[in-house]
Image (cartoon, rainbow, N blue to C red; front, side, top):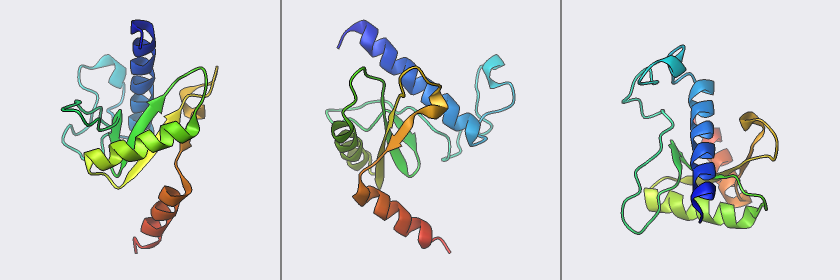
Length: 131
C-alpha cells in the first residue's frame, strides 16, 4: 500500500471516528478547539482507534459491541470488507464486525455500514432481548 493510500485510509478512519463520537454525544462542545475531545476519556462507549499489536489485526475502530473496518477505496468489495470486519472482531473479542464504506464524493454520514445477514440477525436478536 502506498503512503498516499495509507494516508487516505487513516483520514477516513479519523472522519468516521469523529462523526460517530459527535453523533453519540461523546465529545465536548467545540471539541475541535481543545486538546482532548472526550467528555469522559474512560467511557467505554467512546469510539476509539485501537493500537495494533501482534499479528492479528483488531480492526480500525472499536465501537462497543462492534469492531469497525473502515474502507475508502475506488473499487468496492463488500464481501472482502465484511469478512475482514468479522475476522478482526473475533481477534478483538467483540461480538460483531461491521464495515463502514465511503460513498464516493459524499459526506461521511452518507457512508454505508455493511454486515452479513448472520451478523445482522445476531444484532436483532440481542436488541430484542434487551428488556
